[in-house]
Image (cartoon, rainbow, N blue to C red; front, side):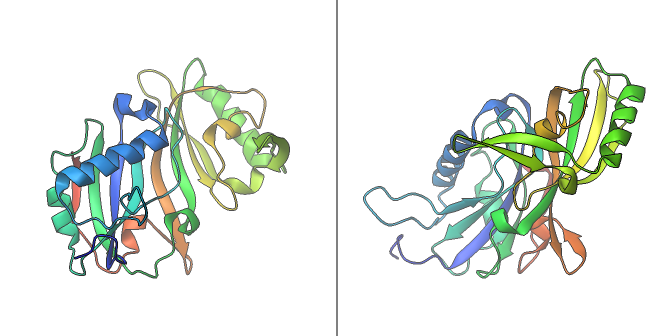
Length: 243
């Protein structure tokens, strides 16, 4: 079979990114997945041209230094009968410490891309040197604010944006042994609201010690679904993950 022919199966893979590996860039993460899929021996579809590459479609990029329990990529395969459980089995032992596969699902080829489909994300933000009572007051101020104006730089230009419509939910979480936690649900359309932007949208400004994306959500017909719930057929969820 020609590896450059049109792919006939697309499978969405969910994975986490925890610990020191959070400091690699999104580009390096893509290279890790390309190597892992080569090692797996799976029939991954390839792009055409002088330097063919695996046909991978990542979701929303995670900022360097952030952890995540909920990352996703869509992989195109050159066979029609690729099964999601076979992908999970083949990925055993191919990924480095800190990246674990949590599930896979067969997608309908007409499915909307992750970049377009995901509408909001849940975040767990850990802060140091902040009292819970003070953070609670800050949360109340953010919730009550009619606007939350921030300045973003895009293509060399300063753009002023209002984050208020993007803050879907915000509360103080249970503290850890190191500090307090801020739990937030932030919108991603038309542009993702970054946790670091939220923390500077209202005085006083805070700096996080650890940020973890805990969920990504796709909203359909009034329901909120995770990306592994929108496939054509359900697949195995491994719980602790496959590495």
